[in-house]
Image 1: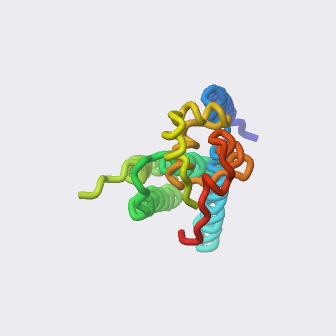
Image 2 (image 1 turned 180 degrees about the horizontal axis):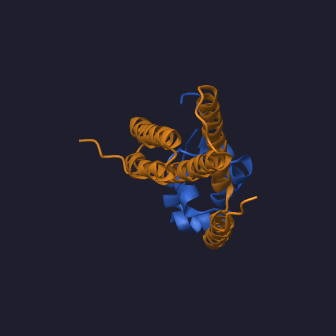
Image 3 (image 1 turned 135 degrees about the vertical axis):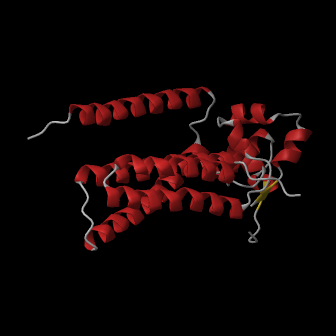
Length: 158
Length: 66
């Protein structure tokens, strides 16, 4: 049985850093009365959306398995976790900003931004799975950042 | 759901921050409620109305159009 010390450090280190960031965020929000019902609404809505993304990812990986592409369990679980937590965080940020911005929300920019996040990430995930080179999935990050930027900072109408 | 919070706030010389403190939510929540992007719970709607000495119907106007 091989024990991956680096993997264990990464998994539990990531968990510890995430838990600390979560606790720090809650403490800061509490100071500004931020843990209110709208925050709860945003958190629940984004968690619900994250489960849609996770369901789509599960179907995506099942399809890959059915067409004969082999994947290791750790890669699949890592990508599922990344997709779930990432979509949870991203949708929470988008919802928070759109609730509090003065200008009306332009749904076409949100849809465009989400597409720019999802499509390259899906494509690079496929490339990662096909080539077994894990870091190819990271190439989707610049597109995801651009998509997030478009969804959040929508250009003003002329 | 439309509301008259901004008007009532100005009539009472109240800032968003002051109102948010009095009803126990963040200023961002008041911004979202004022702009009609977030519909508050019945409890919060009561609290906001009480701050202005009004009934809920005086502050929040129900309209079926979305």
